[in-house]
Structure formats: structure tokens, C-alpha cells
Image (tube, rainbow, N blue to C red; front, top):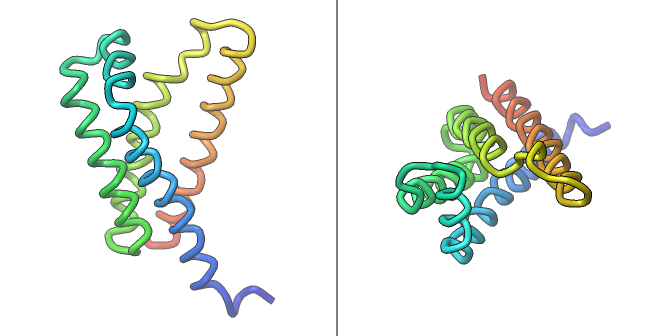
Amino acid sequence: MFENFQNEILLAARCLLGGAFIFAGLRNVQNRKLVTSLMAARGVPHAGLTLWLGILLQVAAGALVIAGLWTALAAAALIGFLVVATAMFHNFWDHQGPDRASRINGIVSNVALGGGFLALIAQYL
């Protein structure tokens, strides 16, 4: 039934996945002081520069995913970003109660995003 809509469904998937990272990158621009301080507290060297590089990766790779350009490469780059960001910001082992649950939920969400990117990579190989 949906085989006639494969291209449209794939476009919707790319827009949702890529758009989430463009949104997150732009949100990080707005919250750069807070995010930089969190990164510095976690021992990230050159936290400010690292944040800007991460923002550039989120926005550029997200836009490439949406556009369907170098999709597999952009998706792989965002999987790498997810791995690093998850380790950096979802340290549930340092928290208790609702904050711990929130961080675990963040890990689960990032794993699901990674799965979506793996599906895109498979589609474009």
C-alpha cells in the first residue's frame, strides 16, 4: 500500500531527523553560555570552541540530511555526535531520582535517533 509513497516517506524521515538537529543546534546557540559551562565542568578542553564546532556539525549535517545530499555521510557524522553528546550530557550514574530518569530517557532517545540514522544510511548505500 505504501510502496507508492516510498520517496515521500523517506523525505519526511529526513526532514524529521535532520530538522531535530538543526533545531538542537540553534537552541545551543541560544544557550551557549550554559552549555559551555556544562561542557567545561565535564572536562571538555576548549569548551567554547568545541561547542561551536558541535553546533556547526548539528546544523550542517542536519541540513544535508534534509536535502538528501551526502546523506549517509551526514547521518554517520550525526551518529558520532550522538555518541559523544550522550556520554557528555547523559551521565545518569551521577544523578538520582527524576534527574536520573531524565538522563536515562535522553540516552534512550539518542539511541532511537541513532537507529533512524542507521536506517537512512542503509537506504543510501
